[in-house]
Amino acid sequence: MIWIAVISFFAILAWDVVTDYRKWLKQRSVNHTDEAWLRVLLMIVPTVFFCIAHTPAFNIWVLIDVALMQLFIFWLLFDGIYNKLRGFGWWFAGSDDPDDSVLDNFLQEYPVAGAILKIGGSILFITIYIFTK
Image 1 (tube, one colour):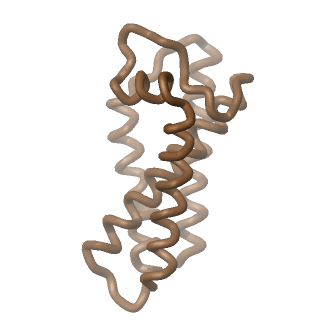
Image 2: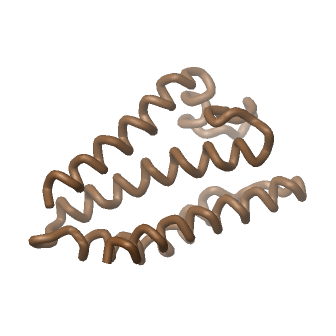
């Protein structure tokens, strides 16, 4: 079960990076709200399999941990890979645009905090997932 979860997670990650990169090459904007809903729907598959693989029993705390684990890992890897494909550094937080979200502005102002948040969240929720099995 864990392999289905991992493979489906990375397939969705790869698809998302490639589709956003293609839009960037064509200088088309990315609609983060619409694409976030699609990503959430797609992530149901790995979420279910990560939860099933978490034995001995499923409960709401496992679901919360799995969701947060995937969120931080996806955020860390998507941003880094997407940045590298575009020729930027792994931790590049984008240009300062008038329509930037509060989170974008925070990450641009404090890139080290962004790195700590992404890595720390990933490590924390992976550790919880492993040690609560």
